[in-house]
Length: 275
Image (cartoon, rainbow, N blue to C red; front, side, top):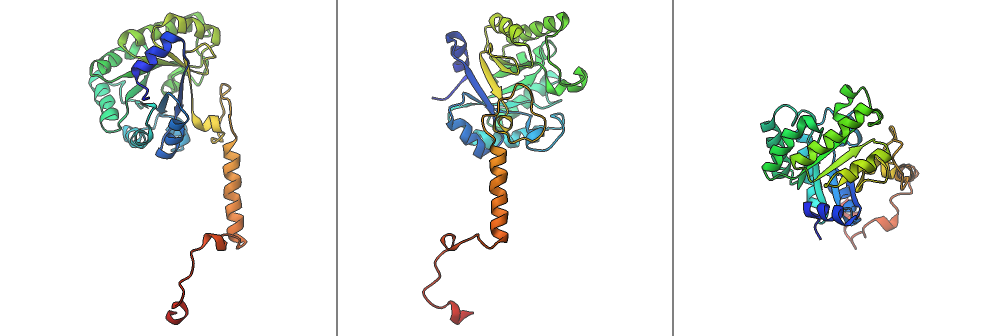
């Protein structure tokens, strides 16, 4: 069955855990979808793992629409959520609504995600009123890395805790149907999850969330950059892939590939006469 916004609400009510993984292209989106994941996030993390940027700030609307289109073509059951990139929604409410609409109309996403709490609640409310489902994102918000002074665990001080709860409440009241919470201690996350009527999707926020999200490059060991503490590598696919590539190179250079079994049959006659 197709996962919808209603599925998220029902999961929260019944205590069923939700799952979310990233995807950025058709082939991997098919694999993620076929694994039974509830939601596919076309994250602006594509800036790091697909486009080779140092952060997510350089990702554009054109990038997001291009990759969301590819993922949406593959997703049969998972809910496709697309990130609104940096400065596509912070500048003004009308711009936020327009760009959210583009991700649905052009990218064929079913929902959008945007970072921030109290300060972007007006944008969330307007986007929801335009009949566009919204996932919030609070705690560590990578698009604000410069303002935050780096990638730091949130909720470590009284002020930070108050801000986190205020942001969560603002996102919920603005109409978001779920909220991603990043890099928050587990005991605090338990209280936050219990305080909300919408599902919390954790990343680096412990086991007490209503669901979990990971970047699949981290999960599969495909990204050779920094590996966050909260990541579990379910496979070392990067090593396997490199081994396969190296074997291909070695066999071609040694004249071992292609072999007879990889070739088409020669015509019965005529080749020698023609050439």
